Image 1: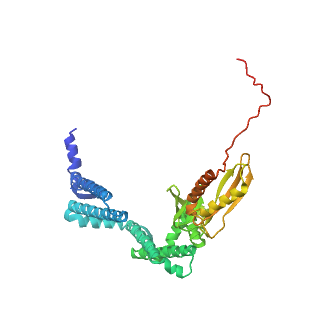
Image 2 (image 1 turned 45 degrees about the vertical axis):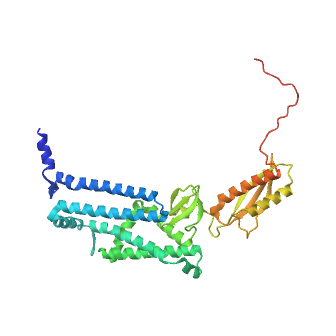
Image 3 (image 1 turned 180 degrees about the horizontal axis):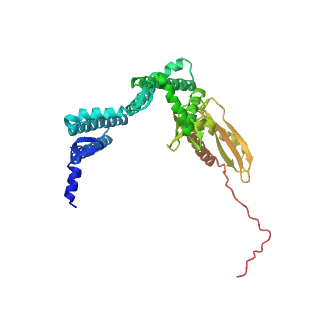
Length: 383
């Protein structure tokens, strides 16, 4: 077998896919498009890395550095796409318009038709930018509403959250429907889409629909809202985003947990800031039975009042919890202003109790066991 002839037949003949024959060979495709595109991509990555290193060593503010990095990526990405288009146009030459028309005709072939509505591959592709534009418009409309304006309207945080969420998704739906009509989807035939959706529900979309309606319930009833500190699935964290299908939670260890909305509606959720962000923390401490309990109570009340995270408008409490086996146990209840300071406040109180008790000679006992021997004879086992 002559391998040179085989290679020539592969690389030197015009590339053909099905019945479509292209005006270039496989070798020309590699040399004039793939290799230059790879080289340009490497240059793009090197430039991006170089700019990032220079900015990291600069004395610019972090916000300015991040902004320059973002726009650098966008400009380089845009230049990369333009170069790819130029390379593709150079490869096809004057016949590029003929192949574009052929490709457009293939995409315009209807795959679903109902009445005056024809759904083709091109329609499905155009739905992606329509959805993106609708999503971007919804987010933008959310930022147009001033918080000061809603405060003057007398809306609390929960109602503000509901109002902004309804506005965002309402704008998204309107823009999405307008976009569908622009790309040629007849809205009078929208029942076909709902019919397909109904079939899809029977084949596995129950969970999606359940999360969708749960998201609407969360927006309307406001059991949680963005910024709330909640405890769910053994995770405690802050609600970052309440989306239509899921809720994003950032935990105390900076982990991102995405919880389906159906679970937040059907399962118990511990919301620390449902109506008020101030909570009570409890510090447990034990003292020796030789301690003056009245003095201990006064000292603990004074420590609680000095907590920098404490809510001065509310009264703290110190209670004798129980007479334990090795100590008399106290519980210190301290009101703090914000639930996000819970662990810092708890740590501060524990450290201050330790320092104050040590300075005043108050003993914090530890568990111990006394061994009593009835007689003085110690018996040993024989070897």
